[in-house]
Length: 131
Image (cartoon, rainbow, N blue to C red; front, side, top):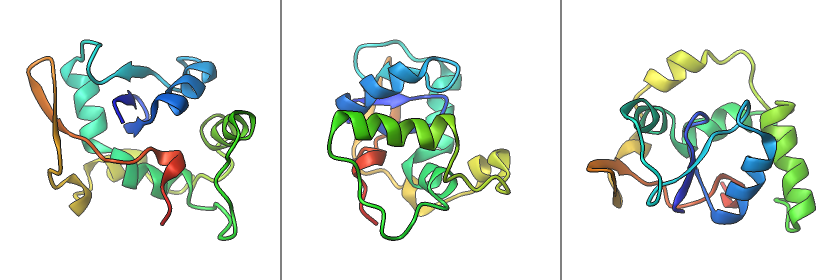
């Protein structure tokens, strides 16, 4: 992925980046990793959260039998349920504490340079992850 929702702290594929933009900037602030300029605060948000922690937070109550959406319409509904309605979110988790938590997911895999800063990219879009 070369796109991110920096305020959510996740990397997304180009398809999901478009769907996140449809949510509005009050929910998801999408930037290109390569084309946009990034502030230190934005980089820090993605470094602190990452896709794995965000999945723990926003998909905590996702049913085990849940099948990832295939169509754009179903993907948009899922993303709205997940981030706008917070349908699957564990609301007990302290987001500030979660961001500070160290995890092995932050081990460098493929550094990405944006505006002379390096950040670790997590290789899969949140929608496509199968755990």
